Each structure stands twice: as structure tokens, then as C-alpha cells.
Length: 237
Image (cartoon, rainbow, N blue to C red; front, side, top):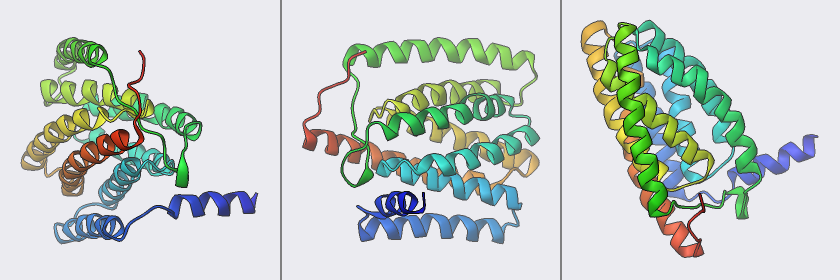
């Protein structure tokens, strides 16, 4: 058991370049520093740091991302509840949490060299289908959140529905996920900025989304470059 863990841990630590390690250090340290200066809560800091680590490890294609993802959704869901962002609560506790375990199993079955997942992309017809379904979902869910007196129903709905779609593509190992995560990150920055203005919401979470935005753009370019390099065929839907 111990030997298996050592082998797994060694694989998770392999394949990293010096700039990638420095970037991880910068993201974590800057988030903690900003949070301490602005006197954020411990839960807010933990949610932000684990969220950043999840994104960075997922971008690298490392299965260990799901450990940090599980911790992140638990803390982030609670913070969202305190800010009356009920769409975010249901998204994290009702969707992300079980999907973390699904993702762990799926990625484990598709590991390549240096314990990095084999990446894929969607064909054009599937891109269109996901877009139309997401659009319909945003409208329907926003109307539901309005009835629940959500503080930001349309933004909350958009981040929730797009995140559901993006998480499906994450489990499928599709590079297209990063485009959706970029949209989610932009909307989340706006949503948490408003929450910070109105009620002093977690600045650590706001910083987390800002860094996630930069990481999403970087990983979209990187994943597509890796796919072309490996000459992968688009997945069939």
C-alpha cells in the first residue's frame, strides 16, 4: 500500500517544468497574501487556495486535482450559502462533489505518460449541441432562482449551467472545457465583486476567480497544442 502511494505521488510530481512550479507558487502566495491583508476568513482562504490548486493540477492533467477539488467545493459551497448565491450552493454540493469522484475514476482509466491524462476535443456538431442546451438551461434556471429570491439570478444561473457543462467536458478530457471555464470565470468575477461591494464577500474567492481566468486561457492554448502534437482524433458523441 505504501509503495503504491509512493509510486503514485512520484508520478504526480513528475513532468513539471520550472516555470509551471513558479507559477503555482505565485498563485498560492499572492492569494494568501491578499486575503491576509484584507482580513479574509480562514474558510475563504482555504476555498481559494484549494480552488487554485485544483485548476492548476487539472490544467496539467494530473488526477490529484480531484482531491483539492473535493475540499474546494465543500468550503466554496458554504461561502456561497452565506452570500445567498443558492445556484452556486446547489452547483457545488449537488453537482461538483459527486462529479469529482466520477472524474477521478474516468481520468484514472485514461492516463498516459508521466501520469498525465490523454486529452481530446469535440467535433463541431457536438459544440453546437452543448451551446444550445446550455443556453436553454440558463434561461430556465434563472427563472427558478428568481422565485427563490436569489441575489443575482441571471449571473448565478449562467455560472451554474455553464459550469455543469464545463464539468462534463472536464470529465471527458475535452480541451473545449477551458473556453467554458473562461466564460464562467468572467461571470464569477463580476458576481463576487458585486457580493464584495454589497456585503463584503470573500476577497480570497474573488482573487481565486481572477487567477482561474488567466489559467483557463493558458490551458486552452496548451491543451490544443498537446492534442495537435499527439495527433488525437475528435471524440465521437
